[in-house]
Image (cartoon, rainbow, N blue to C red; front, side, top):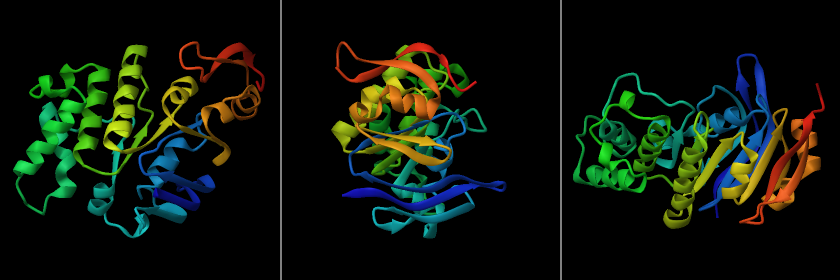
Length: 263
């Protein structure tokens, strides 16, 4: 069953479309990574499917409902989003930030309930941030902040999680930690996870399906074994590489053999 169905989607900004005629379906409980060069449309696609852009054409259904006809609260009840470099305006405590994920479940002017408290506690437990509940954002490392914002998204209790470059500005240990959390949410909680990612090797290690964008359109789509090939990397990224199997997983990974060939 598809939790997200994108049909003929073109999207962009005042200057025109960045994403062109993209069609894509994400199944319930699936882990999908959107990959491509800078400017290929990854972030634009992630924003467009949750109705965050005004310049769109096509159709997006989430759980069978038309996203472009939903209000923000209804979208937030269906889709949780972790943007790049997410930062609140004020120096909230960790628990307050995670509680913000419950707004779609609360009525107007309604105070937090026991159910909200339970959802927040579970989200913080799953992301291992419960021990820092009283800390302010400025007191946290980059990886800790990312875990907090994933906890906020998880507290929304949605079937679909969208993340824009979740590994950006994180060292290797935090990248593995964050993706381990996301994989656990997919496997143990049945969440559909869609990430826009620049690190092909990282995405291939965790996502079941990879979708490569080039110039705003889908250039390749399939399993890591089907899509992480020297020919695809050359065509999409303009990079001359070797592909070798990972010694632990057997999954394909990129080994740089040369430099860029299109410059």
